[in-house]
Image (cartoon, rainbow over all chains, first blue to last red; front, side, top):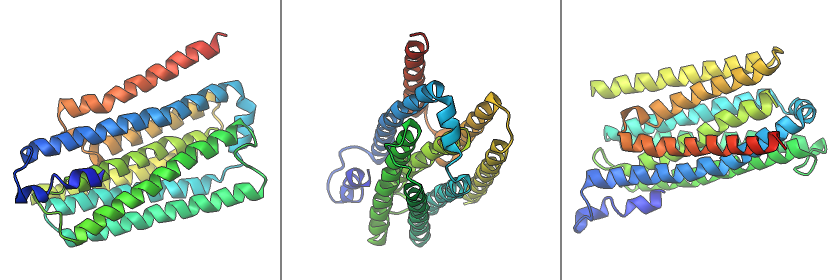
Length: 206
Length: 91
């Protein structure tokens, strides 16, 4: 995300821009929303599978969802919501041209993402030690598939946020130009949004 | 400047609402309400998702075109779920 958009940015000052900055920003925004649309449908297929099998095996889903740690799940929800806040605050900071503050908020976001994956790792190990694997039954199949795919998105988000942090350190973003920060932020909020649905569906209502 | 500061206040308020809603949905899950558990969980999740999309993702301030891009996949998702359910429920 950040990679594609960066060459429209500060480089454009050196040579003639392909489009005016406002149009470039609009194009980037529509680009990320298009990508997010494909992401909705990627997770959507798995959510559909969840609904179908939940209707087919209500007893299995009820008994299995009790085996998940809803306290850890809730803590992770708060962690991810917090990381959404720090990204939003980082974007608010760079809109005022405060690069130092942006770097602080991006670092916090990456840290919170790391905490999320750490807790997810503990949960996975706990499940494995109780003999619960992706091939245990349909519930755990969907549990590992959905949270695993989401976890990969968190990992990708950490790389994207890390790249933006690195480029912010090189002074690439300013009050007038920070499209990659906003684009990466939108992706990060989406990762939070997916978890907002995953958490109740897997941990709370099974 | 002032506008930005009120923006930060809105972010903090949204964050607070999201944390409270998370607590609510976890609390409700300990009470047995049957099918209502699912309804409440999905309702709370959708309110939270709307807050994230409207405020954190700035959808509130975006053009109709961006709204179109954001809502189109939701429409298709509903179509996919409804279509699949129509098949599997009446076999």
